[in-house]
Image (cartoon, rainbow, N blue to C red; front, side, top):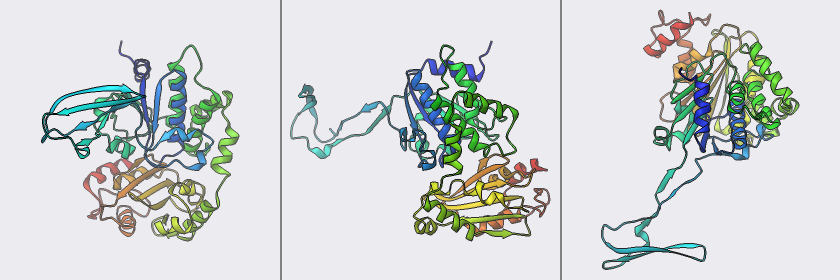
Length: 403
C-alpha cells in the first residue's frame, strides 16, 4: 500500500539528520511561525537544523526566536583550498597538525607558489533534506534558491503548502488547499512525527498559532473554517500564548510604523469607476519615516481593507528588488488571486501578491491601467470580451475561471 504524503514526510525526516528549512521572501506570520515551529520540533527529535529566509523578519515577531533564522545558507559544508598549478607544478604535498592548526605543505617542482594562486571556492552543503514551507513555487523562496539552485536538485525537497496555485515542486508534496495556513497543516504532521512524546511544546504551539491567526486575520477572514478553529483550540490547550500574539501583531506599533502608515493613508487613490482603491509606498516614504520594509506589514489588513464600498484594495511598495503589490478582497466573491496572476503573482482568492522586477517596463501607472483595462466595473473578469493588448492570452485563460 502506497504511503500518504504525510507518512512519506515522516519517513524522510526519520532517515535524515541535516535538515534545511526554508520559506518565502517577504515573510508573513505563517512563514515565520511554520519555520520556528518546525525548527523547534526537529531539535526535539535531535536533528541538525538550519532555518533560512531571504528577507528580513519583522520585529513584530520578536516574541519568537527569530534570531535563529539566517538570511543565507549556513551549515556543515566542505572547506576547499584550491591551488592553481597551471604555471607551476606540484612535486609533493603533505599536511601537519600543529598548535591547533592544519598546515598544508606543497613543494613546487620548480619556481614558487604565490599567495594569489590560492583560492577558497565554496564547498557543497551537507544537507540531506530540504523542507519548503508556505511556498507555492521555488521562485518564491528568493535568493536562497536563486543562489543555490543546484542544491534543490541534488537534495530531496519536501513541499508543505496551502496555496491553490502550488507547483508541486517537491519530491514529496503535502499541499492542503482547505487549510488556512501551513501552520495548520503542521499540527497533524507533528502528531504523526512523534508518537512517543508531544512535539507541541508551549513555544511550538505559540509559533503555530501565530501562523493561523495571521493568515485568518484573527479568524475574521472568509477562509476561517471549523477545522481551523478546532486546531487553534488545540494549540491554546497546549499553552500557546494567544494574548502575546494578539498584543504584538495587532496592538503594538513603533513610531516609524505609524509615520509610514500615515503616508499610506495620505497616498490613497479611489478608483471610483472600478470599485477599488490603492496606495503606494515609495523609497522616499521609507526614508522619511525612518521605517523598514517590514514596517509596512499589516497596513493593508488593518487600515486599507477596512474601507467600505470597494471590491478590493491594492498596496504597492517600492523595494530593492522591484515593485511589490499586495491585494486583499473586501467584497465577498472577489478573487484577487486572478488579479495577481496578471503580473505572474500568486496567493489566495482573498489575499494575493506579486512582484514587478526592476528590469520590467511596468510602472505604477501601467499596473493600475492594466487592472482597469482587464475588468468590467462589476469586477467580473471579462477575458472573452476584453481585447486590450495589456491582457496576455494566458492570463485570459486563467481569469476565465472567475466567471
